[in-house]
Length: 422
Ligand SMILES: *[C@@H]1O[C@H](CO)[C@@H](O)[C@H](O)[C@H]1NC(C)=O
Ligand SMILES: *[C@@H]1O[C@H](CO)[C@@H](O)[C@H](O)[C@H]1NC(C)=O
Image (cartoon, rainbow, N blue to C red; front, side):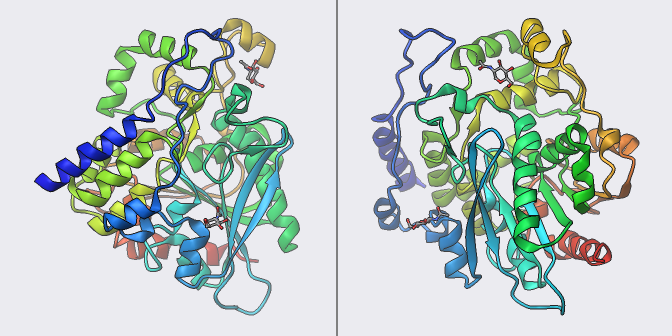
């Protein structure tokens, strides 16, 4: 333990060389990057420290290593964002054309979350092994989708002017249309985790024509209403809303928790060298119960998490908590009138989510509490099942990283995929 703290201190000191300076000389409407340092992946250094290499291998390196042939596809949205979508080819054939499954990750994360824990519990691998054509999307602003036809994410704050609203309105439709064109199918399976479900509800509320392109939407740890969000960190945040709002206004539209930012490296380091501390972090953030995901898997998976989004996206979630509504981004009265034609932001109308939907949630998930899931249950017009995993300790990430996820979650998922084939 002691040697770890020494190494940690050293590492931290090295990292602080890259600490940002908040540039106050610029007007706040065009802020510079709040976190303006960049830290290249220091692989040699991590290797020397004896890190498990799965911690720093990227998606295609991991799928190469575990022998799941993968393609990288590039999709451009109507508003110019360039996204990477990974395709894990089916490992087998069940006769006809393989069915495409589109998967979307949660907040701060990337498509890595579907494969990080290896071939037994990585849902991307499990689906490919069950003959599905797996397409794992990356929404705008994450490590793999940090490009735009005109805007430079390192220079242009406008690049970061998005929240999960734009994921739902632009990113998923673009990726779904691409997958359907590439595979010659007219419908696909949609699978989302956490924010990947929020994005889905947004898409089908704002662009209900996309309901018809989905056979069934599997919503793992669904997030829409956050009325009962009782995370201690969020409560503190709510109490200091004014200060936080000032911070957000100053920080503007920029990036947070990027793959090359300090938090990513600190979490990677903590999780690799002192996994129990990593468990504490996850408990604070999500209600995770220590000891319910194998430490080795947790370390690798957590090391891939902090991979970038916009500060505005976080602000949008904060607005959900504070307003107790599932609504579009509040741009302020003037901004709302300009953007929506109303003084208040419109609500997302989830009664327009007419595709079949399966909800899968956990009893100890503080990000997706059962009471908030019940609001969805009362409004979704085509709910197939509201499945609460029968384990009291089940939290946000047990669904996708837990050693018993295959029995308790994936078997259910596979049953539904099978049921909604033609
Ligand atoms: C993963 O890393 C390798 C080696 O640096 C690189 O060639 C490859 O393009 C990366 N893959 C993705 C999807 O970024
Ligand atoms: C961000 O985008 C929204 C929606 O397109 C727009 O209404 C708003 O004015 C933009 N904000 C800034 C600061 O560019």
